[in-house]
Length: 385
Image (cartoon, rainbow, N blue to C red; front, side):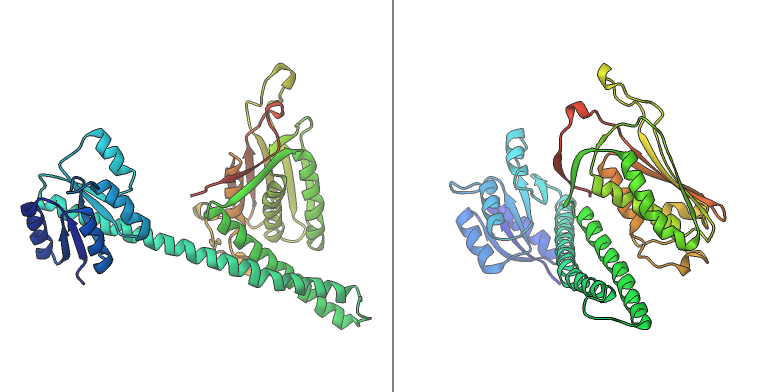
């Protein structure tokens, strides 16, 4: 399929030479224009896939102003053709985000390769934009069309379980509990998808404020103890004293820790062992104006099934799950650890994992320390690509 091109060049012989080269390569030359007004008319008439544009053309409007005008009403890649390479001209041209430059006098190979790269780059940008739009639509559908009815299902199942609408028999209660737990599971998956999509789209916001990591760890421990009780898993904590408040997004750090702890419970067999540790090697002295010289570390260690060394690099990738005989027993979409990694990295920290098959795993979050004397509550948004 030939690609329609418009050439804007006021030197007739140069324009004809370019046109012949492009025709020989299968391009379709829709028109050759010598000024901005003619170029605009031809662009509106033919809707080309590419405009090859000289910076110096006839009339009061030069090629750079023409490119700005073209970009204001249509999405057509522009490649500049010019004999001028002074810094000021190139700076003005660069502000229009062209797809390439061809400097006169040009070689045929240079012209053809520049146009090919320009078309490929523009196509890739369009594909990326379409993918982003599709993700946004999917996020909207998931957020509103799935989460809203799920919340209604959970709300009414809670009412039924509490016998708000009348008494129920044991079999009915058991069925309602299945509905409730399945709904909770599905809602968690939906929320994970939404959070991860926002992270990848660069639309995720952190609300940071002073918080106590020690208190947060105790809260997480209480939550996970209830989940671990049916499997008779022993859950304990080792929290170092003297670690002061830090500037973090408490809600998101809580989510990250609960992901790690829930995974520990999920992959630890009955009568297993889970340890939550909070440590920092150096203690600060804010009165002397000093900060931590080492990060605060939160570790979750379990006596679970473990992960093979060759699989460790996969676990933080989205939708990746380690393919072992045990892991096939467990549900999940493989998004939890991806979320943990991205959230911690947004805080300037890191996550590391060590593991041994049949022995257990250890996940360690390292968070940079900050001085509360120069910090305040704020809302930050981050781009993550």
